[in-house]
Image (cartoon, rainbow, N blue to C red; front, side, top):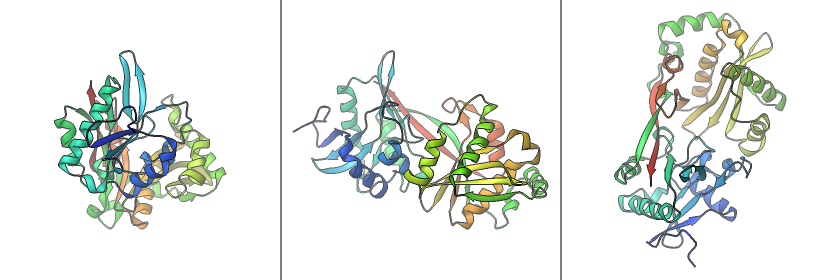
Length: 337
């Protein structure tokens, strides 16, 4: 029996229900070209149910071959409902099956999705697609078909370390100013170590709050959510490190291990009153060194833009660049209906 919102073509759109969680997560992690833990139900379900109105979709070829999933929620605006993929994650977008990254399949997936959002009378679609940097396979076909189907896009600038281009002596990759600052920071005898206990995560959270108060903002995640990530929900994905000066944590980071290839800095923070010691410079150096020793090919610093990419944070971008970073784009697609 067809469910409400189904496309009448050979590609069938089905709304997500909780009993499909295992099928969803297996598809995203094991059978897709552009799925990561950020698009799994295991991750998305850390949000309280009342935070978002879920509208995630599974797309089948025929009746039982899963070819794509779309993590999504509904955003209500004055004009009506927006199909948003996804407000609760850095990346959402259309997750394509490994065997279906082909012209006719991508077109069929997009056409069936278009029919669904039209039937549901959405007024706009926003798709925060996974960056090419994090994708397991080429996603340019998906990007082209989105363009072909009338989607517009905006870009955010992200920086990362590509160890294949990196000199063996880490500081030789830095520009001269950053090398000089690093040599000064070395004299402070900082200690960099992994944070393995709940009390250490609590101490890191205080550092994070102190770092963000100058912007009058709070961390995206609560302390309890970070503890849940580290010890339960994402225990094999999330790791924390602290930088200590005279036995006090003065800086720290939270890292996401995306796969065997790439690790990402979700949070980087330092206590403001210790900035004269250049802890952020030494923290960046320590993360670069640690990630390379762990065998990663890429270390992502995240975006350095604001307001949908319209504003470049020059100071932040230049700081990341000074460590010998490369450049990547996070692209979001949108379309008024």
